[in-house]
Length: 457
Image 1: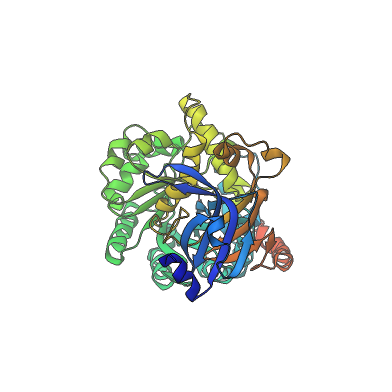
Image 2: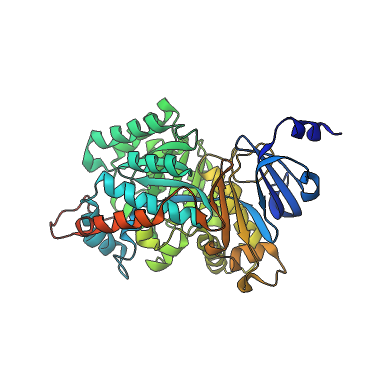
């Protein structure tokens, strides 16, 4: 009897998943697949990935027969604004200036904490059903979002957004939130400081944020160089790109998650290369296509610098969904088009961005992003038996270009099953929808003429 078998006899495992194909990473972080495999979970951690035959006699509190399914690391939405699901479809076919100034920022001046909680719960339901197990959120009234995350069982990286127009109080609220909620929800919540962007936060406030990040050991999550127009405007006004503004403020010496970066230009690359902090970029290509931006995130150039690029959806008000499967496919396609190279970005590379690189982007590269011994048990089971995923000649291509969010059967975070066979177990979806519907008339009113901010980036 082996030592592993002896350990199995002392206490049942919490969860055993059997008969699946498991997406695995080798010691070079390359994607592979282990067939007819089993995953043993104990205390929220992957204890082993082994052959299904090896665990037939293993006692377990819960077992899942996953034959015909693929176990993949839980997807990570590296930049979103979860409560903006309440604004899905409200501002369509507009320039980014009209979108912000005429719709989004007038509506957001109505936001209450109850609105945020109700919408965040709907967003979490959508993400659980789509196989997202962790999301990086950048929004307002984040105490409400933290409560929803703790309640529904997801993992999240949360930041309370602020503008300089709010005065010092906005920055202080962001810090207070980050310190109070860091490590909450049994460790599933991590936090960040969340200045909105260089065009809405002054240089002085960016410098102060960098100081707070150093003093308190906090990362920073910010929009920057979102599009090429912002970069051109920044150069015309200040003689510096948004990335150079971040460097001057000291933010590239902190752990920094940059949202979008489609306006990153050639002169920014040496700036990013000399950053001393752990800098990452989140890409959300669907929104860039909707706004008809001429460029996308320069993933290839960033990869050459060793900068992780995680996958994201942005908020559903611009993206219309929180579907990271779609982001994965669109990232691959947009990169092929941008580079003029069908050999870039491959399906395996896209899966790497969706798993390990996304985990690194949100500062959790040592905990999640792969299904391996010692990692947190954030696992998604995907059914590839549908007509749109058959036959399977290349499983990586099937997952990236054929599978859909609706093919996710089971979603697990920290070893806890949040959805099984498409049934949500931690969120009452009908009551969530009813509550949000009651709140919408007051939320979407724009007759008051107010805006929380003016977009002129």
